[in-house]
Image 1: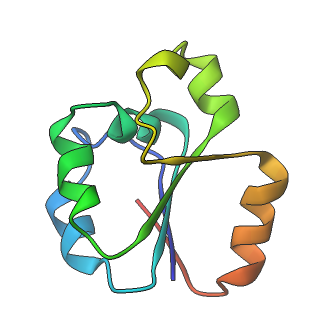
Image 2: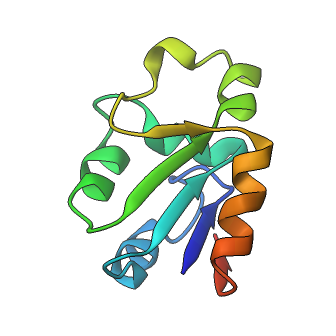
Amino acid sequence: MLHTLMNSPFQCDFALLLRMLKRGDELLLLQDGVLAALEGSQALTALLTAPITISVLQEDVDARGLSAQISAKVTPVSYTEFVALAVKHPQQMTW
């Protein structure tokens, strides 16, 4: 399943998101959700314990001026790669 986090981890039910993540799921952080990829953040620490792949939409990171603060443990993706993720995962959940 593809999970997309569009809101700040402080403005959604982040604890529920963490409970819903299953082995093999992918999480794409976009819009204000990119805040969950900040190096050293509590949100990132929690996400890194899940058995998932974490990606972040590079254009949204750039738009917020956060490129230097995003963890290297998160994979930056383009809009084209975002579409590929959506095609790969017919089941999706938006947070």
